[in-house]
Amino acid sequence: MTAIGAVDLQGAGGNWATVGRRSRGGRRVRRQREKRKGKSVGLRIGTLNVGTMTGKGRELADMMERRKVDILCVQETRWKSSKARSIGAGFKLFYYGMDSKRNGVGVVLKEEFVRNVLEVKRVSDRVMSLKLEIEGVMLNVVSGYAPQVGCELEEKERFWSELDEVMESIPMGERVVIGADLNGHVGEGNRGDEEVMGKFGVKERNLEGQMVVDFAKRMDMGVVNTYFQKREEHRVTYKSGGRRTQVDYILCRRGNLKEISECKVVVGESVARQHRMVVCRMTLMVCKTKRSKIEIEKKTKWWKLKKEECCEEFRQKLRQALGGQVVLPDDWETTAEVVRETGRKVLGVSSGSRKEDKETWWWNEEVQDSIQRKSCFRLLPVRGHHSGPIGPHNNLAQVLCRMPFLTQPSHFSRLGTGTAPSGWGLGIGWALNPGLLHAQTYTSPIPDAVPPPL
Image (cartoon, rainbow, N blue to C red; front, side):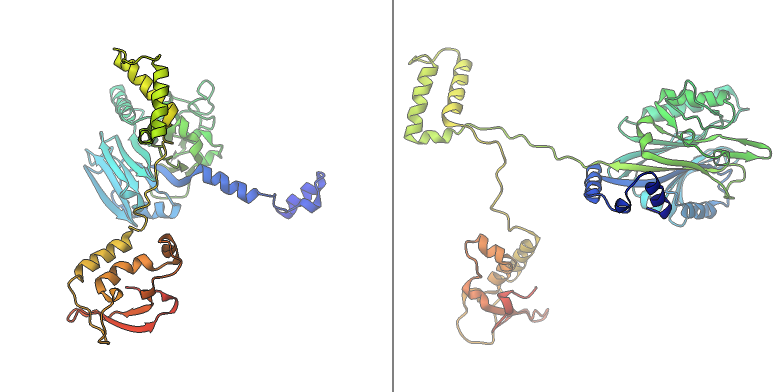
């Protein structure tokens, strides 16, 4: 709390003794809240009409690095091919174009997300998409470039049809972010269209802008630019001469709008002459996967029939359930159900919980490695400094096998003893030589009876 805030609190009737005091349990509550939320991944996603990619690769990479942009949709690349190439600073461009003089779209990824690409769809020189898996979350990034106002209506309808097909091919459970130059003005205000856009657009809506709104309604998406109140300078995406308007947009599913905390136009960059980059900050919430409980069937304890008293009680209860009949009824399904029900009542059922595997608690990587070493030294003789008889703990194969097993007191306690075996006081000095494979033993005690590391 600043000094001005403290004065305001005191003037409003607050208590000076409580100023600056942290509320009890506040940090613990926040930690628990963050734990429930799970892990989150922050992304900065943008869109920019570059005019042409020729000679701008390194400049674009420097701008993305400086502005901390992770994913950038680019339009009007004017590169004829369908490839992926590095543009410097660890950024990689996936692009598609059919003519070196017009159109072309692409997506630029930061180096750490290049390996997360699962699928690349190059639909046309106006629409392409990338599917990424980030911390288990599926994110689809779509780059689009709509025809200009003066183009034929047939070409415009073909573009929106291609964009519809891409959206329909994406499952509803996956995130979608569209960065596109849609060459339309959605306009200022949102009366009648509150579900798909905010009221912070620019100027009046035109026919192409109405197509953008209609597409958002069809696909249940929101025009992200229009939800954040900014100065007009930070809303204008196209500036040429005396014309200032908004034609570049970022769209996402309405259900994921809560994951976007900021969206604005970046001014002062010279990569593109007329267009400005639009950047949004998105936080992907990575929910913790809940372990599915394995339901184990509860079994009747039929093994109790081995006991005479349980067997006799079961016979009596079964006769009572069958009405005192000596001969079983013809309906076997009914009879079998009576037998099962009687068994459950008399003998009981298991809890259905899985038993802990107590036989392999010690079978870890260290033990497995020692077993492999034991197999290598099984036929190897032991050479020592003394001429006495070789005891059981002087056998190299046995020592190699037992060392990881008997390194902690807790392991001895699990064997029923609180101390190490009597023969473990011998120290073992290793002198393994590739030319002369042997082990030397000596009788000097080792502190705490802990064997040396292999």
